Length: 334
Image (tube, rainbow, N blue to C red; front, side, top):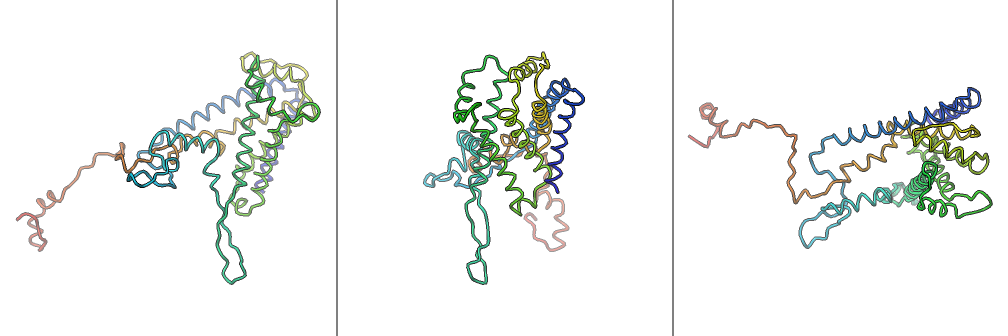
């Protein structure tokens, strides 16, 4: 039901863009106003969430570790899993951000019936989620980088190289982008995994399905534009450059499918700061990963501790000495 509601929500968005362009002729609204609003909501929401996280007090070192901490000279330290220097933290964060290192160590638990009355609990490696997530995120990143050519003139040589490598699989015209195929396969796998595995399906919410359907519909509409329903690329670039240069124009001849594609992207951008997709920015601010683990080398004192008026035992005894003597309680001073 949660997946169905998210799917219907995406269908409604597609219908809104289609009817708005074809019936109401709202090209200016969907081509200029909506992109600017989405950009403001994305940047404003992203900055607000990052500042809010950054202001959260983290007085102690609380890194998540699963390796030997630095201690005695003859004990070998795990410098990546348990970094004691800034360089170790940088390496650890880079491996996490670029290659999802913690997800690579993902394991699954299951009960195996080996023919006895007591099933055996076993743990095994689960790399498909890591591989699917890695392919999805890297393909998404390369697709975004490729799209920069619509917003820059002249197109930098680096983007031309990325475009040529991605389009090396030339079967007819236009060339088929490898990342388009990988992206669609990866997002389909992530969706099927969420509905096929009972444990994952049980904890999935509409907020988990909606971004998947949005991203999937963005990819499908983009591939339809490129390989089936061709649009005027020159007009698309003219619109994109106008938006970037703050001189927006609506060129003639852009098909409705482009406005559907653009509206879905804008909706995803506006939705981004309020969703779980904010892990893109949150991973950099995670204190369990971005901290040096030097608890044994440096004493960390909470700077937010308020001064506490201490009543020492000597003061306590001075105050109640006579009563303690009458009660038979031994005292340090007579």
